[in-house]
Length: 99
Image 1: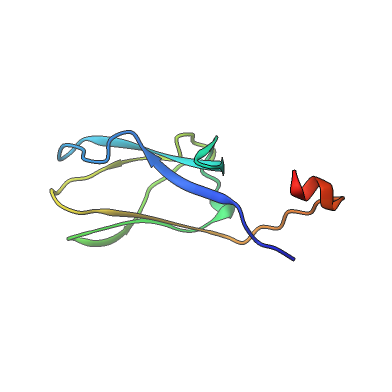
Image 2: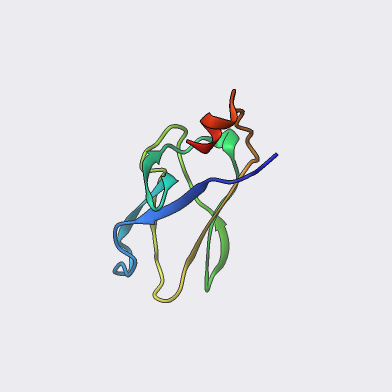
């Protein structure tokens, strides 16, 4: 059994102004080309922001795409964290897997 896929968070502005709302898009695909993916509560184990105030959960609404809009109230480094729940994908043939 192999476990792999590309999933990433994409933001339009990586250096937003303080108090600006920044859309966060979930992407799924290959070679950093992929489709947007909505926020699904059952798929998310952890979705939060860490900044100088500490860690806080991102408020997201089921089915939203972009997955969330985050407002950064303080200047400085902020890290957006998403930890997904494990998922299984089954292929009927090895050829389909290779494709």
